[in-house]
Image (cartoon, rainbow, N blue to C red; front, side, top):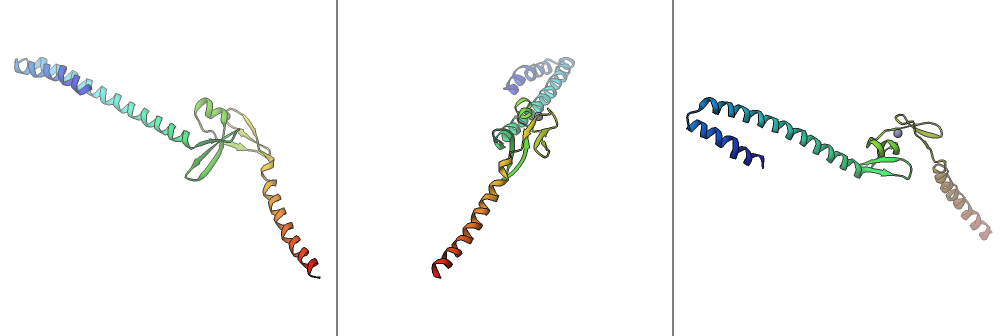
Length: 146
Ligand SMILES: [Zn+2]
């Protein structure tokens, strides 16, 4: 769109000035066209960067998961985190939570998140059930055989 405006206004006028022999005026015009062009290049670069930042944010949003309390970053099957929910929702920033004995703490907003305690006993219960089951069956068979 710009190039059309550019050619229609600036270049055509510069060409006409050259044809009319007004070389000084043509030079001034070309100089201003060059400045305009450089400014547009700069603006284009800024817009490109903004677009890439937006793409990164969208890409990140797809990888961020909420567990009902905190955020986790899932990238190529790997789960990183947890991250502060308040900071991400407010500033779009993933702030690593610092782990304490019974809670996580956000170093940025000082928010606290309880570490769920029921996560650890669960696998223990499973192994407990499995070992009792393994023991019960041979005992039962022995009793039946004798
Ligand atoms: Zn925070």
